[in-house]
Length: 116
Length: 116
Image (cartoon, rainbow over the protein chains, first blue to last red):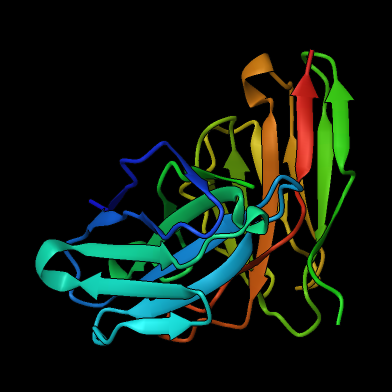
């Protein structure tokens, strides 16, 4: 069975703090894909990153970085020097071969609030 | 280019009525997806189209829900005999054809359905 767990329901930080959003996934497949999406107050889901299960290299994009660890089935997301505009709900999602590759399994999301 | 568009943005209906929700995917995207997002939850998969055919409709909750994509572009999600529990935001996404890998899904702004 496929499952994505985002244990942190809400996180509040003050601007310029670093913050890490946790994501733990479950799948029986050896081939799978992991995603992060951002949902600002406007409601539209914005794609941030996609990683496949064969590529464990960490990735950095500006203030964003992702730490993928197969040994712990985790795909954590860190925002460095957070800004008020980072306030949003962040979703981690999984897609694997057992469910046709079209289907995304989402976690419940983490509400991040960045205070000025 | 234009993103995924969904109409209407809001729909209020009475219990027992029939509703249609429309999705216009990104031009050139052959795969189209519908998800449903309840308050405080992550999106839940409903159905996935490759071209005109439904490749996976296992997420449709019951036979009151039906979706079509007759020409392989615009899709309509149809809900018969609406119930209050159908109230949610209905999200549409599109992608290039996955063809063996999970393609990145790009989401529309959603239709907020309220059943009174």
